[in-house]
Image 1 (cartoon, rainbow, N blue to C red):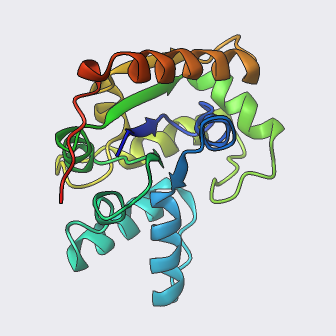
Image 2 (cartoon, one colour; image 1 turned 30 degrees about the horizontal axis):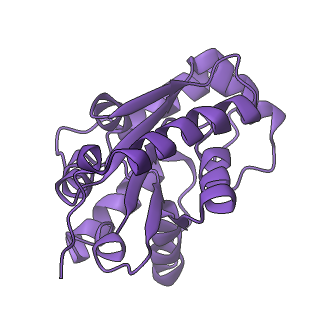
Length: 196
């Protein structure tokens, strides 16, 4: 694998747009751990709404298969792969052990809340009725168990951080392009190993 990324950030930080750019501009295959959770929930007849319910589904998935979220990455034949939000520290460490890089997209809660309210087409994100509900919802993925979701911890593990406040989608794309080009130009910095 030439490049392996995990784009991490809280809802509204710009992960989906960033993944879309990497896919369209650089040919990355995008892997969505959230889709794995949704598929699991559908198969079990569950309807996870809100981050607390989503975190609970995450827990149920790893009870059945502790490697459920990284197995698609480790087994991928893609040359370039981007995970759209591996949120557990254990999964992030495994991605790094495989030579991957974590890119954090960050913005204040106020900015992210405004973005989410403006973009009511977001799938899988509960649209809070108030900013206080939004702030409370964000505490739902704080767990002591590193196998469970803890977005802020994974953000702290990032190799690169892009503060998306005040940046346009094009500006964020330029920041991503710089990261990709730097890693492609200096292979020793990539630390990617081939695993058979």
